[in-house]
Image (cartoon, rainbow, N blue to C red; front, side, top):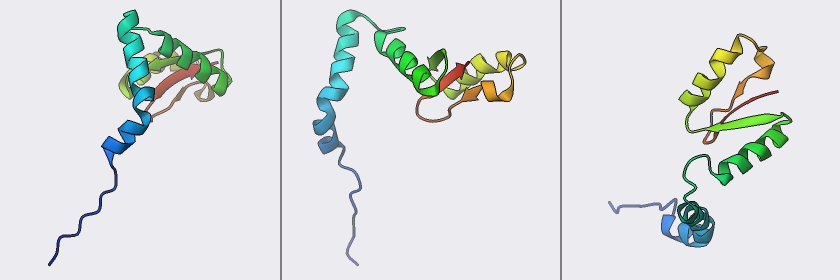
Length: 95
């Protein structure tokens, strides 16, 4: 029986197409020494807050941190006011 192989993703080709998009922000962080609380994070938080229609948004590095940040505040807020987006980007926002 012949082996049949399906190649779903070609990471090399995909990377070549988005190389500048990936490398430019990394180089910018390294050149500026902007490794923690960098401009990209502040911009993301501002844009996400505007998208969500809230005053503020906080980007965190994991769902665990999103819950640790939001749960202590949840006693003071109604369930509609606390959202944790469990996806590739985890965000806590409150109005």
